[in-house]
Length: 195
Picture 1 (tube, rainbow, N blue to C red):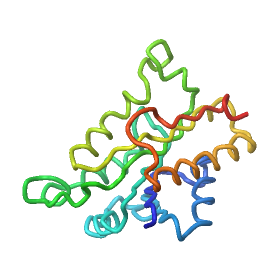
Picture 2: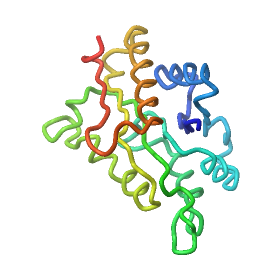
Picture 3: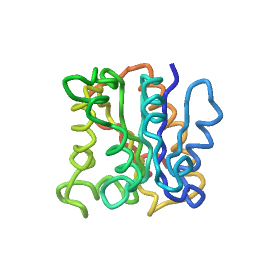
């Protein structure tokens, strides 16, 4: 079954990494369904039933976005509030429509990994900052998997560095769809490790 990639980027044309990842994913329509929220809903009016149907049709779901203000872009929060509903995704009479589906994040971060640590610039690790997503996915009985984080775009936005992220991301997605990793260490990638 194909992997659903829900992309939330408010200005994809100005993106460097997320745009490149989308270009690559679209080369494999037999493996990935790429769904861009800002493209689908420029007015912010979400087709809740359509989104629920799309999610039900996939066993693996990845939320791809740039890390904005220590969270996701606002349309993803709106999407979560409007789509992941009581009576469908959770609740005693819901049937937990997303139960057992593999869910994770694929995130681009501006600074290096060291900045996301107790002694770093932002004081918290990505694992700590991703806890609301982990709790949400656990609450709806989905299988939360380690996120893919690609760091350092503010330090190095070269074509070479961007291209090095592409096979790493595809390898991550292949492992996720094969279910070859579980809870544990984040799939973190730093530009320092890639050059």
